[in-house]
Amino acid sequence: MRDGLGGRAAVAGIGATEFSKDSGRSELRLAAEAVRAALDDAGLRPADVDGLVTFTMDTSPEITVAQAVGIGELSFFSRVHYGGGAACATVQQAALAVATGVAEVVVCYRAFNERSGRRFGAGVRDRAPTAEGVALGWGMPFGLLTPASWVAMAAQRYLHTYGLAPEVLGHVAVTARRHAARNPAAYFHGRPITLADHAASRWIAEPLRLLDCCQETDGGQAIVVTGVERARELRRPPAVIVAAAQGAARGQEQMTGFYRGDLTGLPEMGVVARRLWRNSGLTPGDIDVGIVYDHFTPFVLMQLEEFGFCGRGEGAGFVAEGALPLNTHGGQLGEGYLHGMNGVAEAVRQIRGTSVNSVPGASRVLVTAGTGVPTSGLILGADG
Image (cartoon, rainbow, N blue to C red; front, side):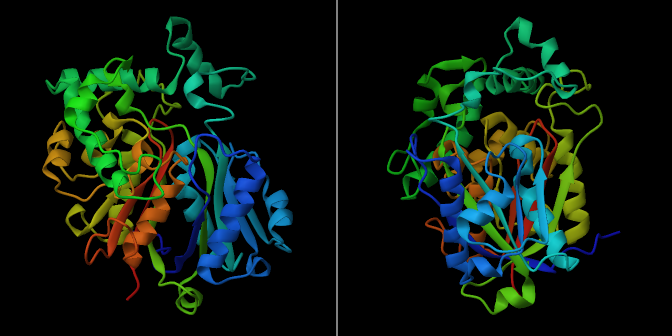
């Protein structure tokens, strides 16, 4: 049974700040700049906005962003939990509000100084005790202090199970950096890498090397969502929200689900995949471009397998063959780490045909959010 959301809302505008390692300004200012840019892209005014959605981790509250941008009354405001897993879910929340008449124009945003400010790669520090954090206590005393170390556990098991060497992860990194090299907005613009470069990069947490890990970035990204009919009257061609879904698996934890039976897959993304295919009526063969959350390379392979693009253990070969245009903006490995929100923007550019790495005729784009945590996904499509 489909959920009835598909085709009722669309992305009408996208906007971002530059992606840097030291923005030199507050996270609130980054958020305001991104929101204004997205509204300008859509041809809308701040007064047109009546809804805002962001991440629980964002330090810029909805009402404060509204004040900074000049937005008036809000009839809808919401936040989504679980870090990068929230990226596509913010758009889903906006689409739900628009489809049900709770709001007419909703802006999703994420802004942070993740390189010059709080760095996730620095590990878990100064965290207040919570029930949610109890799971971390089973691994932290043994050195599992960072996201890379948590993912490395699953990656090691994946490679062992399928008889693969760490070098196969390099196909994801090389693909991302090839696209980033042609993207002027990417931090690694003009700097592609080879498989040899990947294999020579230093270990972070075996089997992850430096080039298997996403960047730490300062920046902001915003996405404008409104009804399809209204979007058709605006400045840019609409990117229709064909389907949207969230997913959490049995025994779900935040990147430390080491006791749920099988470490070689991402069951939370499996939940999302099943719902997206069911609600859209599409199959992997209908997808023209994949924007797959790439905080760490092995989880890209597992996501492709969860969605059925290839068999279990076959993700690296699938990427190496270039069977699906993947992360054409350079991903978080090459463009910037904005908790996946820049990936949503790239999907919109592919639908519009304005990506620097546009895929001719792209009309269906899959976008995924953070994995190892409760997560989300989208399928965006061309209008008509």
